[in-house]
Length: 543
Image 1 (cartoon, rainbow, N blue to C red):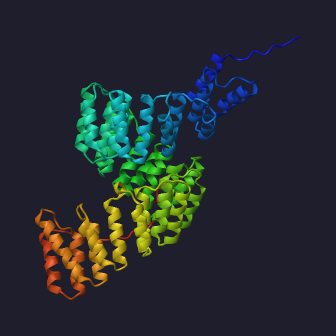
Image 2 (cartoon, one colour):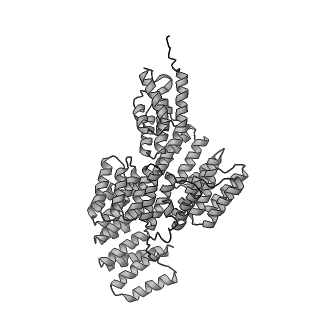
Image 3 (cartoon, rainbow, N blue to C red):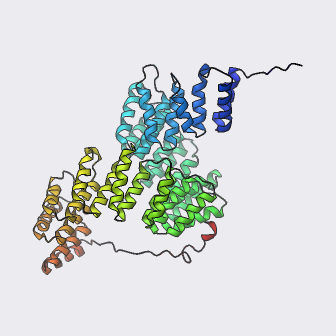
């Protein structure tokens, strides 16, 4: 008896592959790929190669997707879109934009609305408002600006990159809006601390007949948690349950924990983390990424390490976001060895991972290690951002490496230089006693001289006995006050200390009286001690 083998048709293979992509079935995708190679099937038939790229990318195997993509002679827009969106999704923003750049030089393939929506997510991840705005100009020229998905992506980009007025202008110009449009604007106002505007838009959504989704409710809950309004947070959770029948799920708990951490209500964040477990909800990557900063800010390495162990026990993979949060937490808690172990074990590192480790060494006085890591970062092709330069300049300040710090400062592009970087350079010069140069920097600044800059300069004058320059700064401060700019507490205290060093007690008394008249208060310092038996006695069963 002869048996015949019935091979699947092209249409059947395409249908199976599409189902694998939708269900993110990596094993089945590899089996189909192997069958195609073993049977001598022309893999470029019916764009099968691009569909394989999509299936690999959707399943999270970007390495295979990348290799296969570069074997395709003429990848179509479908393959490009998957590589752009998948890399943006995992935080590999530079890789995502690299594929977009390759697409732009093509003369036969053109980006579509899905392409621009994905690219905007990459610029959001990089907090790159400048290039995100260029995409806005491009989509306007192509006539895509009023496409709902592109419009929503633009609103989200402007909100998250800090240009709320542009976001609202675009929102008001949109011919049609959906729940996503309103939710993005609500999130934007919430992040900017404009809680009343968030509430107004929420009520407007309901009056338009649109039902808030879980993202909308969580945005409102986060907004109240972010300002430390515990009662408001509970009230909105209750409202979500009673009005729409939604119960707090993982997204809700993530929103609550993230909000409390951002408002530095650390005890409430820890309690919310426990309450989540009590409700039978297990954490995910977003939860631990949001929660770990609480351990760092409160100086709680034992709790942080327990969460680190929980990540492994629950089988959560340590992606670049979790890794960066762990490094930052261990750094703030003074656990440099643990921070470096996490850094070295992180296979895919983005700029945030490097920044966390460079900053860790800098803050703890290991200046050479910080600078060596900075050089290694550049050698590996990772482009430094504003935070990187801030970490390195701060490290140079701690090590009194004036020339090195100034060389690094000169490497920065003008648009990258912020007041924090200038404050670091001032601090660098003041620490080394180069007060004349420091004063020249202050004089040449076109922007308003901030508290931190004046404080660094006056403290330098005190240490290096340059009362003459301190008095010049006082004249500058008085001129600013006449223009309606108030003196701040830190500057007045620093100036008072300068006069005290030189025994000018009348001037000291004058400064102190001025502080009393203006009701300027200096924030007191405080220390915290990790006490797992008191504040966290209920948490050990969950870690």
